[in-house]
Length: 149
Image 1 (spheres, rainbow, N blue to C red):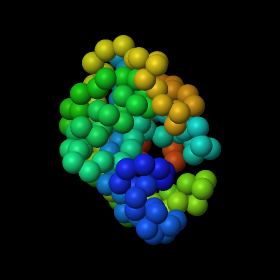
Image 2: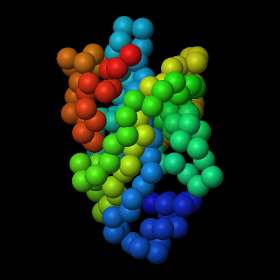
Image 3: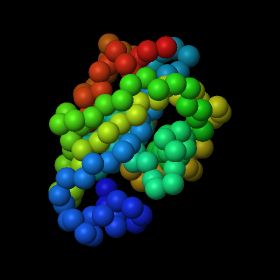
Image 4: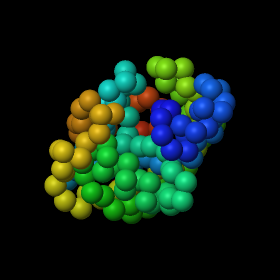
């Protein structure tokens, strides 16, 4: 998670200690009602397209940016489904960086075809899942929220 930008600067000051990170996540379904999930490349398992809100960025801007970076899709955030946080939303990255996310979950609509060239190195694979076939997620989003229409 460390690197350039705001979080990277904080990491240089506090090391691997837990940071509270304002974040966004996207619930995106296809015409068959299957949910888009991203398999993270850093052995983090399956996840919703998600990420941190950058300084000066609105949550809506953040979700559009994160989905584009991680999936190649251009999306429109339609509604806030829920907000999650607390101890259940803690994560330790393989490098030891600790975070606790405060996550705004958006229902998003895809606006066009994916641009494969836009997918960043965080994404190992993308796939669509029916509610009955959901793999375990890196963070414990309630499945009922993810499949809301």
